[in-house]
Length: 353
Image 1: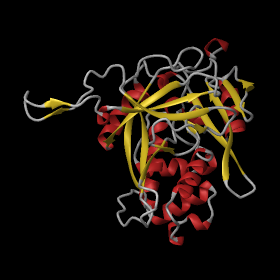
Image 2: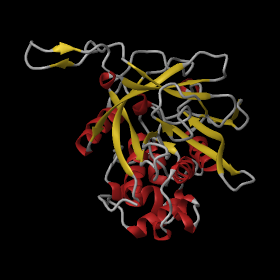
Image 3: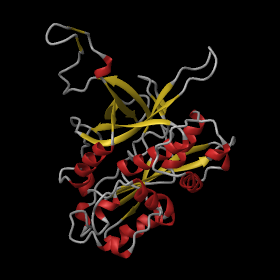
Image 4: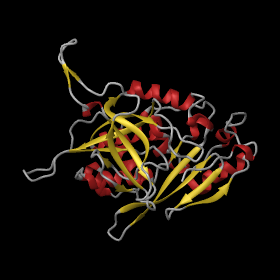
């Protein structure tokens, strides 16, 4: 276990977090667990099936501000767990990052460029600037000459319904079943369309030479497809450049406040569902989603509409009933007069599949 602990969270906070996630005492640092892929996967699955992806603070709060202070995030998502609150990408990813650090993992965060979606919720446009974050964890090589080498994994706990349901090894082209239905996911290594610099110049000034297609300048691209016979769809891309706290605030400001940002005009909440297999391992088996005023559920690979909210009162009630998210009266009232408020059926949009 790492001796370097620069996390914002104490040992007692880690214990409280693991208890909220429903993980047994053997996962607590006091039990000196092995920090391997099995541990990391269980932590990831319990995070996304306990803490919902939701951007409701942008729409249902008096200040309409997303606060990234780790202690505020802990209070919101762990201490006040009875209210069922989660957060959007930066909130959940920063909470998860500090927990990983406190537990002893070698982890940092990278900025992510996302592709906007069309009316059918399919990513289709050019990559945006940085509007998302992902954790990158390095698991050390095992002991002995025949052990597996060190491996890095991307852990995205805050992308919503099409996000990965497992840690993704940074191995180009490796296909994974994404737990629900027939959806598959993978990471590939590519240059993005806007990149003009695709070779690294060696040497000084203009006297150096260039390498062909330098991989260090490429991005990891997260793709999904809803079946082996379907085309791959690129969702987002990230490099291995580390982002810090100052970067988080810049990304957060645009993502939560820009009029062109999807988050600023679309209330969204997504919670993955889990069950245990015969060997006691936790697995993702479905998801429940609210977007605008539609609630959908997918537990078989097929999405079904379970509720349509025609009023604000119905949406607040649906958040509690289907996702376990309980807003206060002041929070529920704070959306009045804002664009996402339900004032009729005209602003209900198709929910993601």
